[in-house]
Length: 113
Image 1 (cartoon, helix red, strand yellow):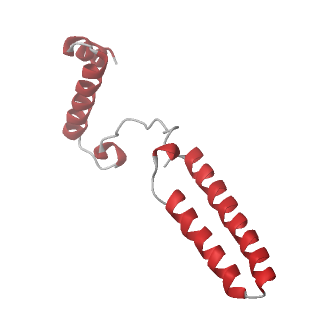
Image 2 (cartoon, rainbow, N blue to C red):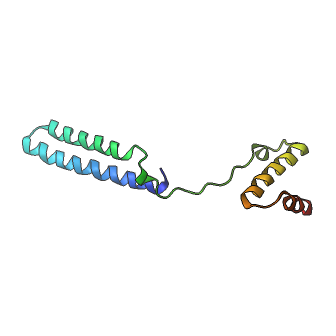
Image 3 (cartoon, rainbow, N blue to C red):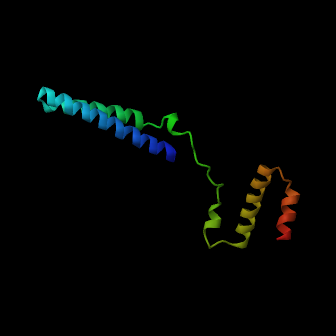
């Protein structure tokens, strides 16, 4: 569920529970029995739960774009030069595959830096 979907789900369950609670209160007041109020509210909670708890497609229309993976070796300071070179090479291979760049141009770019 994305962020806008969470907001929509929250609005939906709030409206459903409030409407069923209001209807239940009026019905219970007319019948002079609290159980009618409680039962109507409980049906509203059940309906709101069925509509908002599962991850329905209407809640996933605006999925966020995530960043590329960062190798775990880069997140620690205790890396050896060999590990760093291997990780850099692996990362460059992934990028060159994504951007359709040859291995030679990636190596030249690394040598220039």
